[in-house]
Image (cartoon, rainbow, N blue to C red; front, top):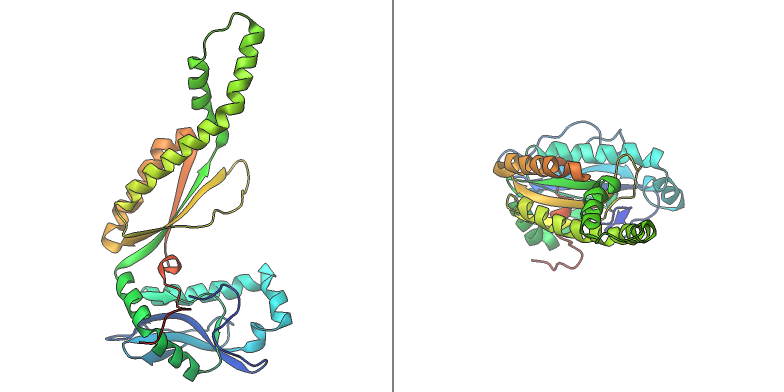
Amino acid sequence: MAPSDCARVDAIPEGGEAVYLYCLARGVGDPPAIEGPGVDGERLLNLIPFRDMVAVVSVVNVDDFCGPAAEARMKDLAWVAPWACRHETVVEAVMRASPVMPARFGTLFSSRERLIAWLAIHYVAISRALDRLDDHEEWAVKGRLNRRAAEAPLLAAALARSAASASPGARYLEERRIRAGIGQDLNAWLQTLCERVVGQLREHAVEFRERAIGPKVSDEEGVPILNWAFLVPCESVGDFRATVQRITATHVEHGVVLDCSGPWPSYSFCPSLEAEGAE
C-alpha cells in the first residue's frame, strides 16, 4: 500500500501535524471500536468514515517521521521498534472486528481532506480488497534447514551407489568427489520438496506469495530456506496448520522444520494503489 519508511502520500510541509493512517476497514453496521493511544503513544485514535468504509487514523507530528533527524531515527531499531509495535497493535485490534487493508508504517497525509480525496480515487480497489479479505487470514510459513542432517541420507545413498574400488586411495578420492557434489543433490531435493509442500498447503489457501528470505541466524537454528505467505479461509485455518505440523513431523529427521505463525494483517495480499485511477 505504501513504502515501509515514511510514506508521504501528498506534499507535507516540514513541522506541524499530519494524519497518520493505520488501516482501512468496513464501516457499515457496527464499525470497529478503537481506543487508546496511537503510534506515538500519546494521541488518541480516530475513525474517518468514507462511504461504507472507515480509515483508522491519528494525528502525529510531522517531524517524528519526516526530515533529516527522522531519517536517522528510522535507522535506530531502539526507536523504531516501539512505534512499529504500536502501529501493529492498532491494526491487529481492528482486524478482530473487520477485514482490514493495513497501511505501512509511516503512511502520512497532510490533512483529513487529502486522505478523503485519496480514498475517493482508490475506493473501488480498496472495496474489492476488503471483500476478498473478508473471512480470510494471512498465515506465514517459514522453513529452516539443518544442512548436516539433510545431507546425511543423500551422502549415504550416493556412497552406496558408488562402485567398490580396488584400493583405499581410489575409494578415498571417490568419497571426496561425492561429498563435493552432494550440495547439488541437496539443492535439487529441496526444490522438489518445496514444490510438493507448497502444493499441499495451497489446497487450504486461496492465494500464495513468496517473500524475501531472512538472513541466517545461527547454525543451531538452521539456515532459512523459505518464507511464504498464504491467504487462508477462516474455516480452513485448522486444516492448514495441521498440514504444516504433519509436513514438519515427516521431514524433521531430514533437517527440515516449518514454522507457522498468524494470523497477520494481510500486507502480502493488498494491492498497490499507486497507479489506480479514480472511480
